Length: 268
Image (cartoon, rainbow, N blue to C red; front, side):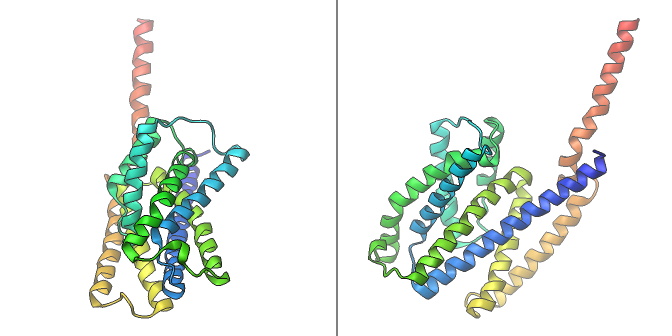
């Protein structure tokens, strides 16, 4: 395939991953807000545990279909990841702008060090996160809300929203790892700001003016200007995104030159 064709194919895949993450992340926040505001299900940590339990079922299906291969992740690394990721999730429950660069770098490090695809890493981490959050979630939620999850008045409507939230969470968790594997840390941060803006706008349409004031609107404008500036800066020669994609191609002439000089030495 021609270099231009590969570049276009990569750009299309990047755009698809970006949109997949945006749609699922924004969608799950809107659904969760409706679940908590309308039906009073205020057990966010337990709900996140249910999200990862559903994601675990998805990874089992993917493993059966051959999309997840046998791989290894040492238990100490898994334990550190679960602690780090669970704290990060608590932060993202507060704000989607909590897309920690540290979390991004740690996930990227694990994928590179142990040659793990997004599917493989999710297959290792989702069961551990589900178990830890479902074990600690009810106690943490009781401490935060003074309500017990087992005493909640479950009905058909609230159960449908819980199931919908868990279903969307599968896409959110998967797209999160895909984006980490494809984008730089700064792009990942920009993605988080973009999702926050969409959540605030859609929240305004669905739930009224709650949480939307002059300071928030001003922050959204600044974030949009920053995203536009970043896009222009990274696309220029020498930009971080441009450099990261051009590095492999710039090394090849040096290697070919070295091989040519080696051939000449041999002939001499």
